[in-house]
Figure (cartoon, rainbow, N blue to C red):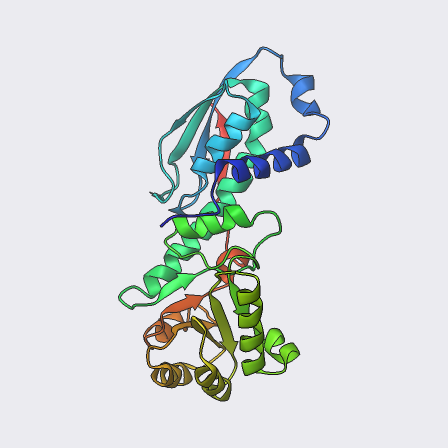
Length: 285
């Protein structure tokens, strides 16, 4: 799967901003305690089990701090890991290793937590046609890393932001004056501005779905907070005219039952807002 939001320019811009936030006027702890010319080695020690993610991000981080740092990757993104494994080793100027340490850990721990949880939910819906989607419920300025981690864990990225796909949700429908009005006004806008964007519509009831089917001209229907029985009925009503997505109230307890309805996609905000980071440390050796 091509991750269109992943390009070196944006990754480096994120890292530059993150390093500026952390280093500020300088790492005075390291400058004060460590000789300018000191060299050392460190390794990324895994202290948890799950799916590792963020190693490629770490490569960019070390390069941003200093191109003289030598990094040896012992694992790759997406590998299952156990306690005691080593993800990478780095050698070079001691101050530079310490400058990169926290950002490397912040990214790999969080990204690995997301990849692990994504993988876990994917296993629950294995054998169904449903694909697991992320959402825009991400940490501000960390969306690139979080969606990258979802993909590493086997999930599918939904739209990256408000600009690359239209999703007409409940507020859009209510503010526009109804399902039909929201759809037709959006189509007019897209055509007038030559924007080839797909339209997804969120419906809260089977009545709204009937209006959507009657109006047509959309790509996907999001079935919001519907019971599995209603989802099955909705899929029958749609009859293959649109892609289908279940959203809202999806948990570990009900995701399998929802997947078994025949839904095309299941979006889960918890992938990027309710995960547990994997424990790791960057230790001298």
